[in-house]
Amino acid sequence: MKSASSVRSNRPGSDIWLVYRRELDARFASKGYFVGMLVMVLVVFGLIVGLNYANSPKTADIAVCGASATSFGTAPQETRLRHCDDPRAAREEVEAKDVDAAVAVHDGVVSVLVRADTPQQSQDAAMAVAHNWATNSAYREQNVDTARLDAAIAKTAPHLVTVGDGAGSSVQVGTAISMVIILFMQIIGQGSLIAQGVVEEKSTRIVEVLLSTLTPLRLMIGKVTGIGTSAILQIVALVAAVAGAQFAMDDSAGSLPGIGALISCAVWFLLAFALFASLFAAAGSLVSRPEDLQSVLTPLMVLVMAPVGVAAAAAGDLSADWVHIVQYIPPVSGLLMPLQACVGGVSVSQQMIAAAFMLLAIAGCMALAARIYRNSILKLGASVSWRHALAT
Image 1 (cartoon, rainbow, N blue to C red):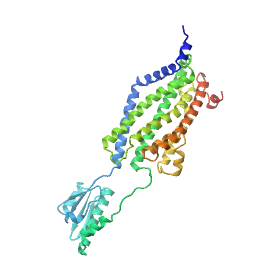
Image 2: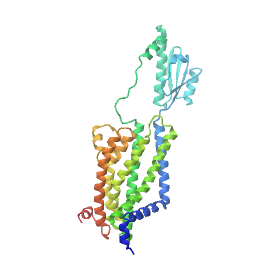
Image 3: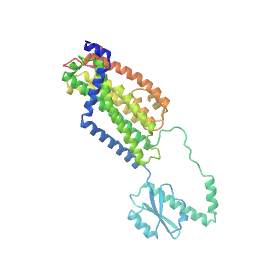
């Protein structure tokens, strides 16, 4: 009859699988996991829809009276002209907020009627309409052939040409920042769960039972991948929420990230999570009581939050030279690269180069965390310092 050890040697991944399933089942058995996922989806959906609505151009309703419709010329973009009977009716419509502003012509004089709370966009549109009428009136007094003039202007009208890569509109940048910060907060939240799970197993001495059948490294790998899988499912729900918002708003202007950018965000989340998850597990192995966990997590939290500060500074100008340098450096690349991908500021080849650097950093962090975890997980009592765990 084969011994247990020989069976484990024939199936070296079975013990990791058991720990993985144990962590995954623990997440799925919790109502808080699914409630948190639902709340995250609703918040992201509402945030994106609200941000898009707040920044979308509004149509200005302008009442015009006292002259023929053609004399006011072509209405500016995002402006709707409504004809009224006379200047008194125009004033009443503005005061009643039936229209945003009015342009009234009386005895050869044009007036623009606005309220104190009339949006600046509507005021500018009304002034443009009034200016059109004044210009056309002056042309008629000078016997200018306005039809011929309009044709000449249309022939030589300027064309808008966009050059350079740019960093996207303010709506795109705002949406992208919201997404990647939520992703990074997921890393912090799931990483904290890993650390809490490790210290709870250590304080209840369950870890001693587990380590009688598997090595510390395999225990850490099983725990990290199990919790990581549950985090990935939440990210899938997050991506679905963004795609749903994109579909609901008919995002023809491209203010939301495309499918390629969403995939990029998911991949970079996995890389950033892999970078930090093992370090959170190592941090949990340093203490024996849950109340002591915060003291060892503090330096790790500073490291995790550093990319957020860099991204906040870079958001003002994603095309800056220094941003093009630091976006390749882990762990900052874990946030800057998906941010750049969302606004179309980085290519696939550039992301692959940054991912190669990130994979090297992940390998180094996992080797470091495995050493700390192995040297600290069975030490009960006083907290083990990072330096002592590395030196052991």
